[in-house]
Image (cartoon, protein in one colour):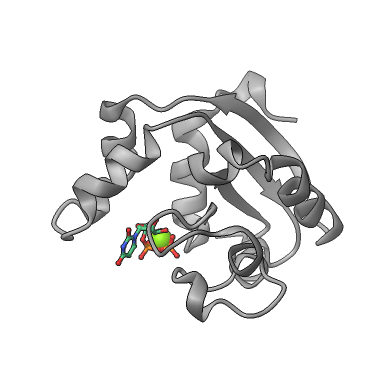
Length: 139
Ligand code: UDP
Ligand code: MG
């Protein structure tokens, strides 16, 4: 599959703490083009569905509660090698382990409230983008 698109969410902690603008700035300066974007609140049910792959993990309940605790910014991004390059830009899941200057290093609170999501494969980027956006909502 062509790996030129990824999917992201600025998570409720980062939105609530006023980091939306700074994070979008890093994304754009990182060379990613915004193909689709929306400011939206996930219901408990929708957050559960999005993170279904983690259903058996011990943190699933907490993750679903957190992701439905406030609005998020969801977006589809385009760049060559988008998935891998975006994971580099956001840094490790645990902000304590995220490289200096990465979005999670700068803005995340904890391993759960870690500021931002990035797809882990081109296949999942497509599934996740389709979860949020219709054909009319992408450019
Ligand atoms: N998460 C958590 N505790 C953990 C691992 C993950 O709360 O020990 C949360 C965290 O918000 C993370 C999300 O679950 O971003 C999905 O986990 P994954 O392992 O896919 O990390 P990611 O791909 O987001 O880096
Ligand atoms: Mg993941």
